[in-house]
Structures are given as structure tokens and as C-alpha cells.
Figure (cartoon, rainbow, N blue to C red):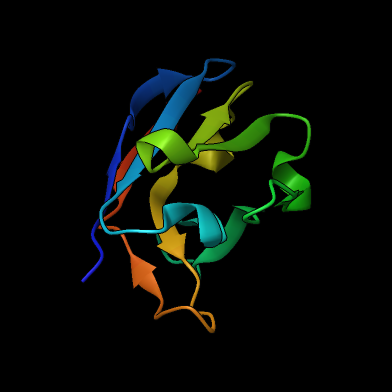
Length: 117
């Protein structure tokens, strides 16, 4: 069983920054792609950013140039650095390990990010 534990959420003013962390339990963290999703009130959950096991990244258009996903395989941790935050970034942010040939999909419990205008 894999556990994903997010931290780093909070309340920040527009234009500010936050860094989310997701610590993963289990073995062989480095072989898995990882991702961050978010869900705003009344909206569907959306993929924000992903990173492959080789470090290739992908972002939703609305966060390109402002958010950076990264990973530290030695710490079994994936990060989401969020800069120039906007009120529309307000959401619960979830860490995700996609399902693959190597294992099942897993989700973290989520961390709230609130950006005030």
C-alpha cells in the first residue's frame, strides 16, 4: 500500500508563492510518473502538472510559466512550486501517482490552497 501525504498549502495573497510537497511511502519511487491535480469548488478535478520518471514535465496552459513540478527521488518526494498565484488558483491540490504497468493509481488526501485578491 502506498501513501501520498501532501503539505504546504495555505492562504496567500495574489502574486505570492507557495511550495507544495508530496511525500510517498513505498519502494521504487523513481520508476513512477507523478502528478498534481486540483479541484475548485463546483468544478471538475483537473490535471495541473505531471513529471515522468525521467523528469519530463507537462503543465496545463493556465499555469505554464508560473508553476514548476519537480521531484527528489532520494526523498521520495514530488514538489509543486507555485509563483505569481492568482485567485483562480484557489482549489484543493491533490498528489497523484498514475496507474501503470508497475502498479495501481494512488491519491493523496489533498491540501487547500487559497489565494486572496
